[in-house]
Image (cartoon, rainbow, N blue to C red; front, side):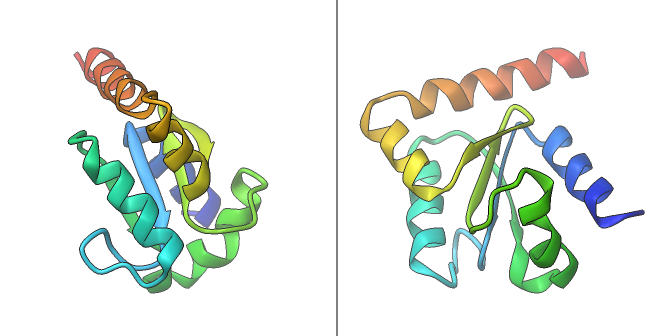
Length: 111
């Protein structure tokens, strides 16, 4: 499977997914740490992909949605943005509701 197809499958099969350096439990950069902590603080389940362990994804993810930096957060199959955008959404009180809606919509689509 082509790497862009793998990315597309991950984005479409996970209501919330963060492409980050490291894992939520052991982030490998400050931006990834902040974004993962922000997502975790909502209590909504999310998936992650450690781009440091998959060189193909690391090299090609910026082409997928024309976003050059990490982390990248996808909600409901769409690029929400990077860590700063997620933090801003949380500060405005918008993030948890958007995440919950994506999870609900995914569950309804599966049934």
